[in-house]
Image (cartoon, rainbow, N blue to C red; front, side, top):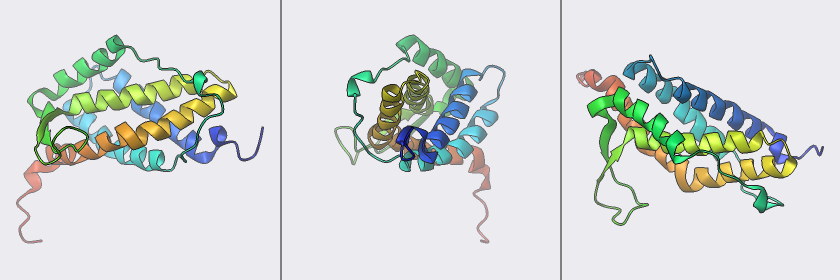
Length: 176
């Protein structure tokens, strides 16, 4: 085991810890309230973003060891519970430069964003748990790449909406 092994570095282990908390929470949403969901996300998403940004970019030695595990059915199960919990607060408008027109707002969904992030985090966890160096290396590398291309951007898209939903009645502090 090398001392500079990225798969057991602090950034990788810390990302695993946060990803595990995120996935565990979403897999146990039954019986939770909308406020509990939003409050948890308000706290964990900035931490996930920070930890994702600390994963260095690198190419794994054996990229063929990469795998995806979350099925469409797994994704939909998480999505449907969240969508039901959020109700009419699920939808919001966002300008997303990843789509065709980067100046026109598009209708988006907190549940969809959080489910997409769940898929990336769960795949990261499950691949890492394969417990071979090649699998762990691919898990960490994929997590970093998906942060840059996918889930990091989604975190940024939904934090403002979550903040608004938790604090929208706090808008009459004109004396500050």
